[in-house]
Image 1 (cartoon, helix red, strand yellow):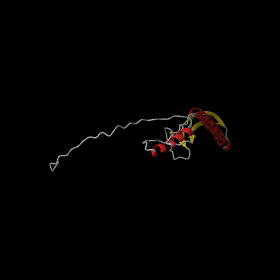
Image 2 (cartoon, rainbow, N blue to C red; image 1 turned 90 degrees about the vertical axis):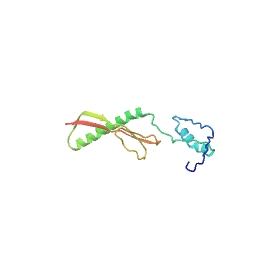
Image 3 (cartoon, helix red, strand yellow; image 1 turned 135 degrees about the vertical axis):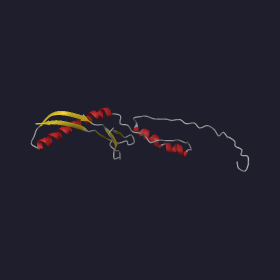
Image 4 (cartoon, rainbow, N blue to C red; image 1 turned 180 degrees about the vertical axis):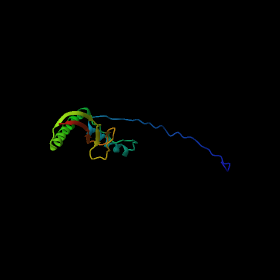
Length: 139
């Protein structure tokens, strides 16, 4: 201290802070949303709480993938037949097929497609995409 004044300091114990994390996982989406919305009532009662919005996961992705691949492959065959027949040719054997990554985007969201796939967890309603590439022989 420049003036030579003595500065006293004292530590005062004010108590402990207890924190605990709670995570709820359930397929009862309406119930989880209701509980999430009731957190405001706790805050109004001076209960300090940090709450995060619910995350929504599609739980039947395995089944959906098979159905989507099947549908995309049938659509690809129809398009190829239409294009080749329109040019006066015939579609030959399937030579090669490949399946791209799955994209799970929020319905009406601004999610971007990603080379590694996209998994939206913020929107309850989702739109799923897959790209199936086919290469046919033309007779």
